[in-house]
Amino acid sequence: MRLPGVISFVIASLCLAGCSSTSGMDALDVQKPSNETTSSVVRPSAPIASVPVNRSNNARKRTEPAPVDDTVRPFGLAEEETVAFPAPELPDSVDPPVEPAALVSPPKLLSRAVPPMLAGPITRYGFRDAKPINFGRSSPRHLAVHGVDVSRWQGNVNWEKLRAQGANFAYIKATDGGHHLDPMFTRNWRGADAAGLKRGAYHFFYWCRTAGEQADWFIRNVPKVEGALPPVIDVEWNGDSSCQRRPSREKVLEKMQVFMDKLERHYGQRPIIYTAPDFYRDNLQGAFLDYPFWLRAVARHPSKVYPDRKWLFWQYSGSGLSHGVTGRIDLNVFHGDERQWRAWAGGRQMMADAD
Image (cartoon, rainbow, N blue to C red; front, side):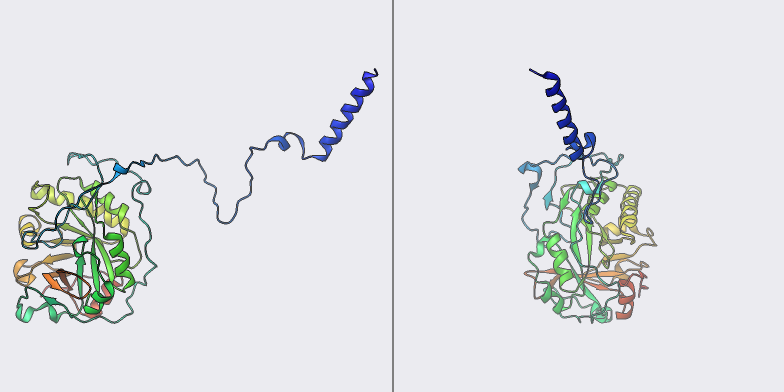
């Protein structure tokens, strides 16, 4: 056997194979990622941490209370028990750590962009009322721009019919407390926009949860959309609530300020305060003079119920009747004429002077 010749032949074959392949060890590194990207792929500058997802069917607990009659639930915006997301109760003195909004109920842009200035005509008042009140010369019918507020209690709303009846804007129940989401919010949010109404979202404030926690929950569930009306904080005493706590005036104002500051920073709009007569008397007289107010007054004009308080919206009925809605609906009016409405809804949020 001639071993030196065999060895020479093998060495020569390996050299030829190396020349015909890609250079060196790079050819063997099949796990190395490509340096190429497409226009639709952006490489992260740092690894993205994985987020554990709870797939359990018990992650959401649904509670379905029986509807409360308006005579029992006198302040039209207050409903709490909707979709419950279990969360630990925390003492009022400690705000919980804030999780990134993207990790819990991320907001989605549900709508096309809305031009800042309204272009369409104002739909004139056409509602009926199951319990009409004679406001005399101060009748809300003398004001031009009417609207509604809705929640799960209105069921499936036909927004086109509601718009034709006289609804130019809608405030839609979104959240309450730190873990309740109105199950009709997304449907109503989309439907109002598709029908051409100016829309906004409101939060029912829960006195047994921290203000920061509630603000974070609202932000996680209400999209930040161009053209939307300012967010609303609904503050009132609600005898049907599971939370019967009534904090001091000082604590009430402190909690409200924390909540409103967070919303204003996120949405870039000063929140509107909705309230009712007894809560206003106990807590809000002389407070928040630089905030717009939405006042409930279903028997007398706001100037009689809330002396010296300027207001932006007036909820004048909790017993409205309209095509597009089964049952009753809250009726509201903007404090100004059509020109003032266009200016305010277009972004210049002036406050109308009280009568």
